[in-house]
Length: 78
Image (cartoon, rainbow, N blue to C red; front, side, top):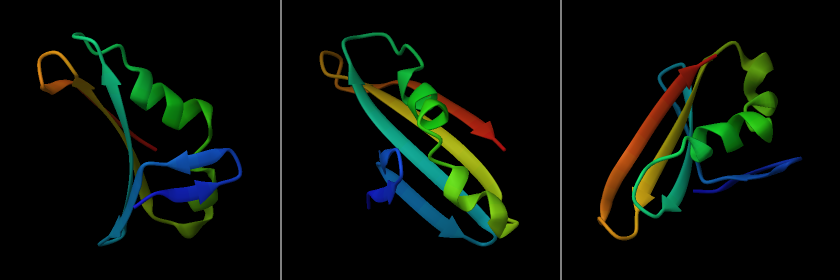
């Protein structure tokens, strides 16, 4: 489900077992460029969760419209 922040909407937020997982999904041509993870960081989507004392994981997933598969998957834990 999308989760609104002051800078936009993260594509999916999951709060599970003391961890928060924030997902951003992008469609690219063929090769992943790291844009999904970069958007999570640039827009500060994790900011609203920082005071909760939970581990936060940013997950950027990029799909190729031509190859019809995931072409990049980046994770950064805060």
